[in-house]
Image (cartoon, rainbow, N blue to C red):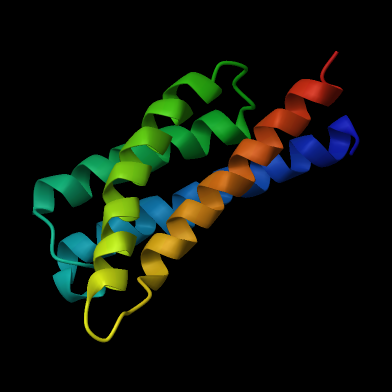
Length: 120
C-alpha cells in the first residue's frame, strides 16, 4: 500500500469518527433510544473524543496511536463486555454495535501499522 492510499484512508477514518462517532453520540443525546442506555455525560464525552480523533486522523497526527491505544482499551472493556454478555443471554444475541466498534478498531490498527511501514 502506498503512502498516498494510507493518507486517503486516514482521512476516511477521520470522517468516520466524525460521522459515525461524534454525530451518533450527539444524536443519542437528543434521542437516547438510538443507543444502548448510558448517561448523557457519557454521550457528551464521546462527542468530544470522536471529534478529537476525527481531527487527528484527518490531520495525520504522527502520535495518534497513543491516545488511540487508550480508546482501544476502553472500547475492548466496554464493547467487549457487551458482546460477551449478549452471547451469555438465552437465547444468545450478537451485539451488532459492539461488533462494529471492535471490528472498526481492528481495521484502524491495521491502517496505523501500514502507515508506519510506508512512512519515510
